Image (tube, rainbow, N blue to C red; front, side, top):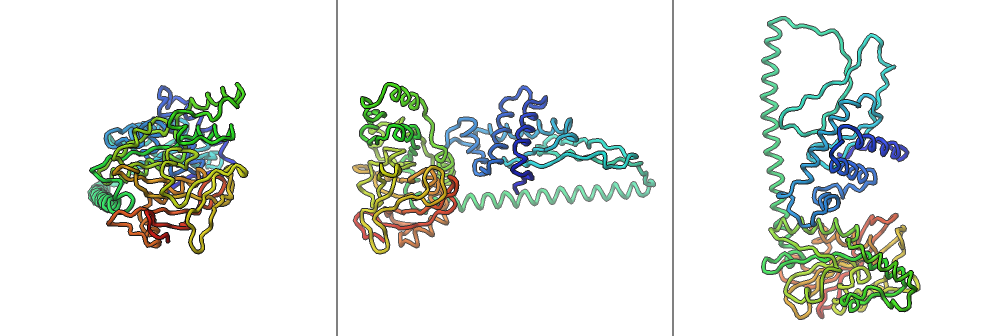
Length: 460
């Protein structure tokens, strides 16, 4: 359970406390552990608990590939273990006077933050308050809470009573050991059962049953947020042809030298959009559960020739943020279109049926509250034997919502069934249009607005 017992007004004080902890003696000499602690606390305070997973931390903090093997590379677990030990050392020394306490429970990367300032003046003057020294067993790795205790005169039990107490405690320890062993077996049984079920479900639900085909490699192409920034700054669009030919600045002759220089500075960046990393991590986990592997590439790092093979591809983002996805527009009914008047992408419906609109225009622009739209589409790779999955939104919130639905197998299977699209068995190309409710830049709810069966079939 998440435990952050602080209010919004406490956040500046918590951040000052975090700074004191990281700069203190316990974390001295370990920049990596200090950065790890700062990352998890900042994410927890911001409410980004989905970022506090081993693979996401490995990617975001330590620069690992989204498909890296967490079993072979234990950098996140090792660093977390070191952080727990250093927190114990810090609060052993300063715990009584600390206003806050930060701990990292064993088996979790979500920190616990709470008020821990004790008013010693309210205690009886005859009592002495000292910190309780934690006892660490050789294999213990959990965060020990250092609580104050009141010392009183020790009582000595008679010899016969002491013997009975020792026997009772011995029986209690044996019982506790058996209980822990039983719980461990139960937890592992549940873990392997879930892993087995997830592997089977991911290998049988479209589109993953097609994309995780052992006969074909799977390539995931992330979006290019720097290209979005350049288009917004210049007011021009970058076509897939220009993008393929590395013409990243539209009509440079029409731009002033200052604007051209600014665009070149923007192009120095080469990082995926913030929403892409969690999606790539979730897809990598599905692939791993199906004994499959995905290869991740930035959109600007591939060539057109890289797409002309029988691999399966996953593209994140709309044509504005990932121009490569425009290569498959001819197969889609719901097509992205940039509307210069409103300065945003809208979605046009090429073949509307009853109760469908010809255009879907987002009302949430620029981290606002309102509605946006996204698509999930499984199409073919023209002239190749591979398949293509498109996960794109009219904005980042839409792409995030598309990624979450596509990797939530029970929800995805239910959505396909409601659209009369078989979610198992024979390959079926399809397209889902999602209506996404957003609040302050975050998707809060996503529902299927319309769904079409592609490749000449009647839309539903």
